Image 1: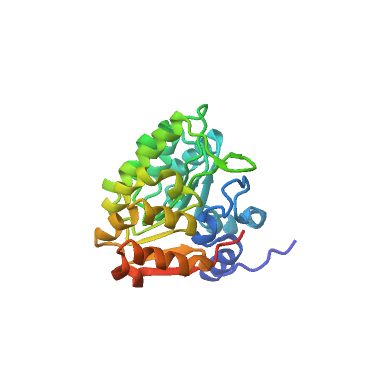
Image 2: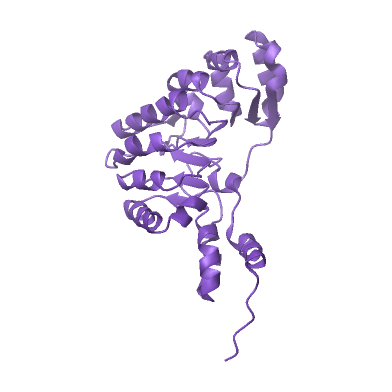
Length: 279
């Protein structure tokens, strides 16, 4: 059987990039509904079969396939850690990491072998049966520029929203915010999922105000909580934040009035209101 002609590496790379790469914004974005269990994006897994064709496609495409990595279970973390240790070129290609679980000791190996990581997503919905050992050793090794934090809410009642917080979740939260405040000097953008500020305002006030963050992105309900509780004033007084993006354009008028009422009128130009992101 006649073999097809080999494509130049540059052209092959461009073709596979279109098929395998997913934008960091789509890969890392938080769920619009904190009760949603489904990851809010389409993964490129269905296109990974392209790499089963010729060997040079596999060689060129594997780093592209691992540009965005999601970890959700212990076995995932162990497998990825092993792969990155054995193939440094694949680890160097990782730009985005989504942590839905699998926070075991192997996470430190993942962090150590992803030197070019820029985007990091962390879910703070951690059950008491799960381990957070890996976070303690991995977080100091990360140097993200973009951080996405999500607080998923497992319980909804007919009259209110009720959260459950395990001891492990509290530990993870404290670890995360300590690095936001003191360790991650390259951090530029922080995106909070729905209800993060409502539930965690006291925890993140010092962290965000002390961080190197230049842009904060959050939902209208959370922005209101930040303003009312004084967190937004602390963040703005740091002098580093130049942009606040609020998901909830319909609430712009009410929130601008609230900012004025709370004495933050001089910072109004820093606020941008955009429609809620959709799945």
